[in-house]
Image (tube, rainbow, N blue to C red):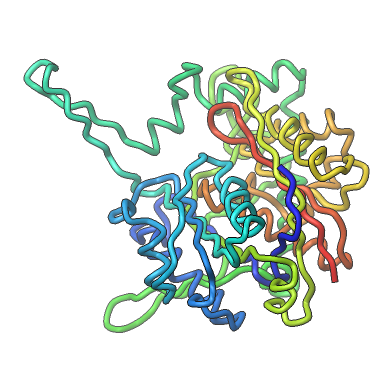
Length: 396
């Protein structure tokens, strides 16, 4: 899917810090979080929400009131005349939201506000009526934990997909541990100089606390140190497997967003900082229980629609819930592992689902801005052995 005259203003992609499962945001509705973070991001960047023409809300885990979704969030931000879709495409939700916003803009929809938000902590327990069951006992599903552990079509788990691809590739435990250690080293770069890189896009979360006080969350919470010798002692996540707690991501809570509009309007909103052209997105699905392979065909589809080859890409970020994802991508696309994810990735900072890809896009853009511009590729897998990818160009 290729776009023309669609861009994001530089400086108008943002993310909250990501907090660990059952951490500081565990009792905060992800809708409240989206309003909190987006409101602050727009104020800090001197953008009035009332000036946007549409909203796209990405959320994968229901919250109280989320039936009213995007219109309610828009109104709470001050855009009382704005509406739009609520999108759930598992871990590819951010790319799906970008696609929806880009398509709206390209077909005359004007400026679109994209919000992605999720809280994996305290996901809902859903009660499904079953009047014909013995005693009329209902079926109960813990939405998050059940679906993390079981693909209803493939009959396996996402971890099983990671182990399947690792076995087929013939990778070793040492190779996977090396990837995790490398990604942690890259994440440490984002923390240098008092988190100078993260401060380029990260928006603090300010929450009300007791007695009129507030709690300020300025940095990621729950990132685990990945020391090569220490992680070598970890046991596998499943018997006989290769992945451990260090070589798979952890569930998290967070929110991220962007403004998508026409190129001329993007230049106005960037106030001289330049624009991020949205060139193309791509989606793909691979064989059952092979999810880590899906980012490759998704990336190839997006690059083909953009009229580009991988050799023309200047920076790459990935959503990699398992270390094998990056090994497969590097081998298949002939890209060195250390040329991807310059400042870390979801393997290290966690995975709140909908906002994961949007944060990776924000980091991709900031990486390219520091280099003076260029072509960027984001790609990441999603539940159901699928993936989404996006190609952007950062210009002055």
